[in-house]
Amino acid sequence: MLSAEMVRILEKQRLGFVATVSAEGRPNVSPKGTFVVMDERTIAFGEIRSPNTIENLKHFPAVEINFVDPFSRKGFRASGHAAIAAVGTDSYRRYIGLFERWAALSLRIRHIVVIAITEASCLTSPIYDDGANEAEVRSQWMRTLQSDD
Ligand SMILES: Cc1cc2nc3c(=O)[nH]c(=O)nc-3n(C[C@H](O)[C@H](O)[C@H](O)COP(=O)(O)O)c2cc1C
Image 1 (cartoon, rainbow, N blue to C red):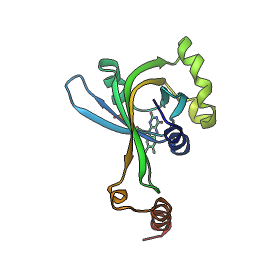
Image 2 (cartoon, helix red, strand yellow):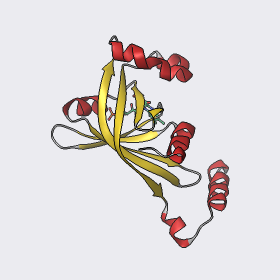
Image 3 (cartoon, protein in one colour):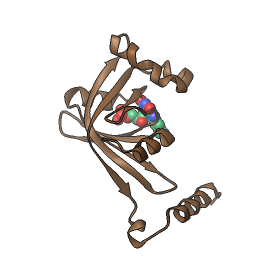
Image 4 (cartoon, rainbow, N blue to C red):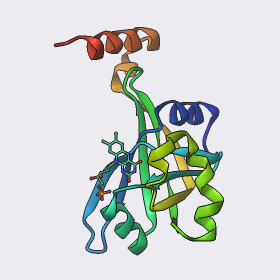
């Protein structure tokens, strides 16, 4: 089940790294920036050009996703089972409105992948093990990522 903080991170980032496994047992990780929260146990993303992820999920619907805020160096991992709604189906028509914020990009969504979450847990950088302060970590990474070098 997603905590309020996990929902906040997902809705801020929208970007999760999706891990799947092929029928031959080969691992695959790829980013998806179209994540939405449907409820505290269900999230979804739009498949626009992720043929391997879709193929893998058709064979084996187990999935894990990592969401990380690059500034605070905190996030969460969620695992569960994916259901695929292909364009032209009733399920697709029911869910596509969730992707309106992506405007023209949403017109290219070929499948909506709906993930029923079975487990979710927090991720934190080891820097927090030594008592680092989140505001300081955040401002340090803001400076680093904004600088030209
Ligand atoms: C920041 C970022 C966000 C992305 N968001 C999506 C997305 O929401 N949906 C999608 O299908 N592809 C998205 N992509 C593109 C896929 O990750 C990319 O096409 C990848 O090669 C698909 O690999 P796969 O077939 O192994 O899943 C995104 C890529 C990046 C870098």
